[in-house]
Image (cartoon, rainbow, N blue to C red; front, side, top):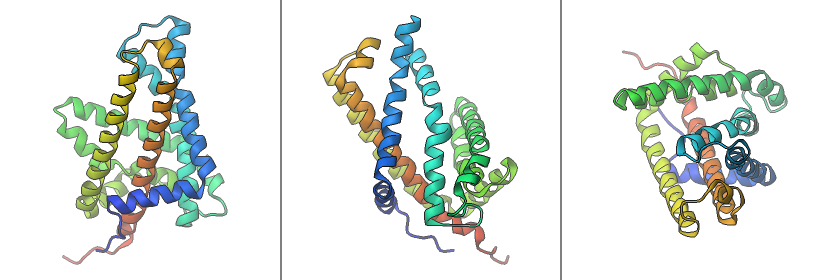
Length: 242
């Protein structure tokens, strides 16, 4: 079985090329994420909600739904159509395919996150296994128009063939991302220690940190998209005879 080159460095370079391919769109997505992140402290102030981590996390998750539901998947669908131009997501009609699928893909992702969360609560390992086995299912729904059941089967089959390659690349990408995010967070906290909701809404360092964090997250998402694109052809290869 052959897999197109998609190590961490290649995936990262491809991610940067994809952002350069549509620089205004990429910056727009990051800027939108930065603005949406500001809704959390704004709602805390306006609604008088407690300044607690769980409140901030819940509001932050809810604020990011428009980005994760529509704008980021749309960017991925467009890139897939331009690069792969497969019949399931053709370059001439990717918008129509996207409009038909994005809600289903979002629902699939939410179900996956729920299952992973429950698995993580059950001694961590089950959650990691679920994520490893079915992590490609949302992309299968979004880019290939598969049903939930077929997307789960395709993700499992793909990971059965490529899990060593995917796992080794993913761990490096995630490790690098986490190190950079933690370093960025440390720098921001050095400038604004224990920020209040008002400071999180108005302080320039926090806004700058949000923007850079959003840029890192976009780069990570596109790196995983590149990794998926590299291993996807393994699904089309015939099974080896027993």
